[in-house]
Length: 302
Image (cartoon, rainbow, N blue to C red):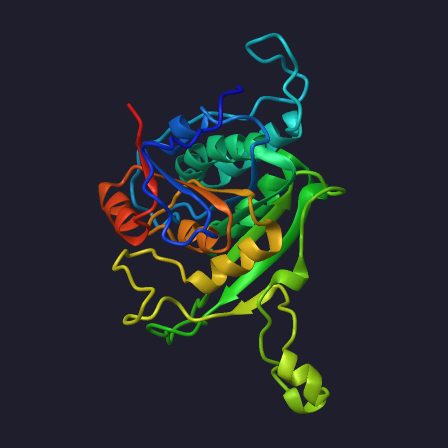
């Protein structure tokens, strides 16, 4: 479905605190309904941090991907998905674990919409924990094509209780897919560098400059006190989103977050001169984001 990307209303948006900052739009509503109104290929970077599948109940919006050779409602073949191979894989997983239907039935249509919205040079980041990352990798390969897979990022942290009955789980997984493997934007030189683990093994110049990050990111969670803390329970640290935004977008590009929560994606993207579109239907999240980004424009879906 092709819609129109949201246009800023000059008379509705307060002036930006920093003239170099990018604009921020906060859409209050169900993300699937909201993003269906955005234009194809209108976003360079999409970050999705969906609710982790922890066994909690959620409202389901079950839709399935259309096979590659099946016509859409308009009579045209809907390209870009892996058709019957995907359907068979989904069926196998549902027989293996009936909880799969609840979670993937919720997430799949949102991923399909995200793929539609990505520009040809765009990148999708899907942030998950150990409960779903393995399912997601196989299914995204089937849904979008294995050739579109770019990276599996591991965000490792060391905070909170430690289990004594198994290896403590202290990492999240971020799966990275690009819309066009030959055209995607990635600028490693724009990313904040990090210290060498063994600075004595490199020259003093290299040690002072730091090294480019690998696909394993050691970064603390949001501190319980400090500038970043908003009090929102699933808030992600700015350092993680800054690295993503720096690498996979340029100043002036549009960055979309389906599950915006505390608004970290928007705060980081705006500070880096990108234009952020944030979507959430939780009034608590909307309140946190509007307080965090006073220059944002709030759009409430009917």
